[in-house]
Image (cartoon, rainbow, N blue to C red; front, side):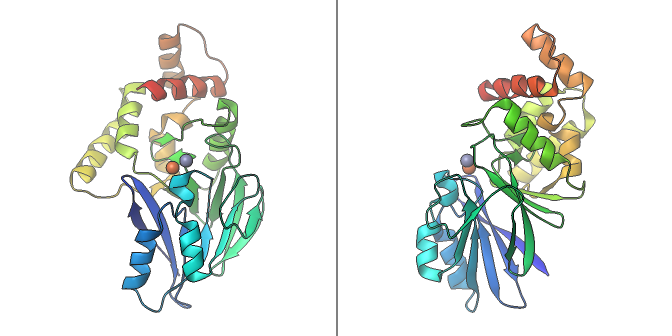
Length: 255
Ligand code: ZN
Ligand code: FE
């Protein structure tokens, strides 16, 4: 059985903790800071950190790797084409890794960074800073076309896939989504729900792909109302969904 929980880090990061109760081994995804993981391990004697999964090279995702590896001797998995501290297993697109007895497919999802990867196991998606709840990562290294392709690839996974991204950005993302589609009732309802959750300090993750398809503007670039909104702002006719994506991303960067 898979148990997944979140260890909050910094101001808005989540380090995902995967627990295999049969073996009392656990894994973490993107430990930008070692301290929350070490605190959890100290509070749960008997548990062994055996694996560390990394999606991309940014400090808030890899900052804790070396300290954790030293303390636990965990195996570190990360993208082959990026500098990942302590990496033991270099991963490429369509690789498969076995962690805690579970098979994860590896997908290259360039855009936020060029080497960014995502991990997928039976309806569970760990996608780092690529797909966010109601948003997507900034384009630090890749092109809009690359990110659009990456998001489309993730969106093609089963609708009930749980989306475990790294940041609690859902509320601000939904405010943008509501500006893009003021008449979308799913966005309005989610905005209301997430506003409540954040007021109560409740985590808004994981999301589902089904919900993302209804409320995430970056997955809705083929929707007429989204294209029209972008055309209206840019005074031009955007044709390809990737061009609509590029315009949305540029708008969000300044929102
Ligand atoms: Zn990042
Ligand atoms: Fe990040």
